[in-house]
Image (cartoon, rainbow, N blue to C red; front, side):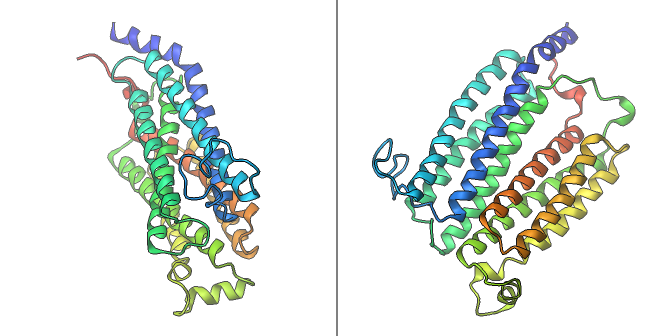
Length: 316
C-alpha cells in the first residue's frame, strides 16, 4: 500500500518538477538583473519608496536608473506568483511528508525574507554610492538569502523528479554526508564574500589591474577594498571542500563531473573579471556561472544527504 502511494506520487510529479525548474530559471534571471541594478548604481532609481516606485505603481517619464530598478521589482513580484503556483501544484501532487513540500515551504519563507532585505536596502538608502557598514552587512546577508532561496527551489525540483531508487551499494557514507555539508557551507561563504568583492569593484573601480592589486594591500584603502582578497581565498577553500566531497563518493556521477567543470569555469571567469577590471557584462556572466555551479552542487549534495529511497516519507 505504501509502495503504491510512492509510485503514484512519482508518476504525477514530473510536470510539476519541470515547472519548478522553470521557476528556478526565472529566479536566476531576476538575480542577474539585480546584479545589473547594483553594477549600474540604479538601486535608488525608484527613490526611497517600496514597494511603489517613486510613489506610483508604474513610473511616469522614468529615467534609465528608474527603468532598471522598476524592471527588477516587477520581475521579483512575478516570482511570488510563480512560487505560489509551484507550492499549490507541489502540495496537490505529493503525499503528506514528502520532502518537496518542505522544500517549497522553505522557498516561500526565503522569498519573503528576500523581499524584506531588498526593501531594507532601499528604505535605509543602502544603494547607489552608499559605503556604510550597514550596507556591507546587508549585502552579504541578502546574497546569502538568495543562495538559500535558489537552493530551496532546486531541491523542490529535485525531490519531484522521477528517477530510480538509489542502489544499496552506492548509498552515501557518513563521511560523504559530512563532506556535502562542508562543501555547501564553504560555497555559501564564497557567495557572501563574492557579493562584497563585486560591491567593492562597483564603488571603487580600479584604472588598471596593478592599481587594483595595490589598493587591496594598501592600509589607506577603504575596508571594502581591502576585503577583496577574502573572496579568492574562500574560493580556494571551497575548491578543497568540493574535491573532498567528490572523492568521498563511491563513483563519479554525471552531476559530480558537472560540478567540477563549472568550478573550473568559475575560476576562469573570476580571473577574467579581474583582468578586465570587472565590467558590468563580465560581472553578470561571472554571477551566472556561480548560480549554475551552486544549483549543480546543491543537486549533488541532495543525492548524498537524501538518497532516493527517502524522498517520500512512508506512513507510520
